[in-house]
Structure formats: C-alpha cells, structure tokens
Length: 128
Image (cartoon, rainbow, N blue to C red; front, top):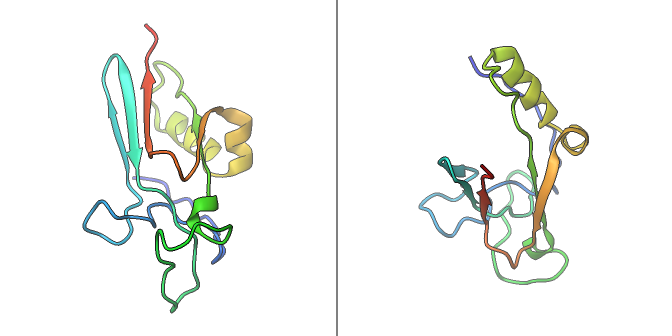
C-alpha cells in the first residue's frame, strides 16, 4: 500500500513535466533515477506554467518573458533515509518530510538550483 498525499495547487502553479518535447506524451512528470555504487543520476522534464481547466496549455518556447516558463527555477534537495531502517513507518515519515516546501527546507539539504537555461540532468558522485 502506498500513501496518498493530497496537495493543493492553484491554476497558476507550475506543473512538473509540462514542457515535454522529448517523449511521446504531452505531460511527463516522471523522474528517471539511475544509481550504482559510485554515482546517482536524475533526469526529468522541465515544468511549464499552470493553466485553468478547459483552456489551452501555454506553448513552449514561444516567448522568454517573465510570464513564460523561462522564469521557473528548480531547486533540488537531498534527504537520506535512516540506515538499516527499512520499515514502512520510516519511509512514510520521510515522505511526509518531503511533501511540502517548509518541511523540505527544514529537513533536507539543498543541492542545486536549475534555471531554464540548464539541462534537467543531475549527477551526484557517491563518496566512499
């Protein structure tokens, strides 16, 4: 069983994966995570600005002004689960800590801020 975390969004809020020109679906909010003993890579599709229901979504790359997706920044945070604690309670506790921005800022470490000029690809090397 997986938890359902209700989040309230306004129509003006950006939505993940809304600027998808790479894959065969309109919106791709997937986060592609690959890891091994030495490194972790994260790939994702940039966000686009939100829009009201029953209206057309904003076009990508038509303009670069402050009302376009180019103003968006993506902050990336890291939070480790406790070592050797594989319980459901530990997982749910840490998911809750990453569900809303105040808890993320209080519990996780900010790794990098990506702007619209950056590729949505991150590589973290594990220190052994």
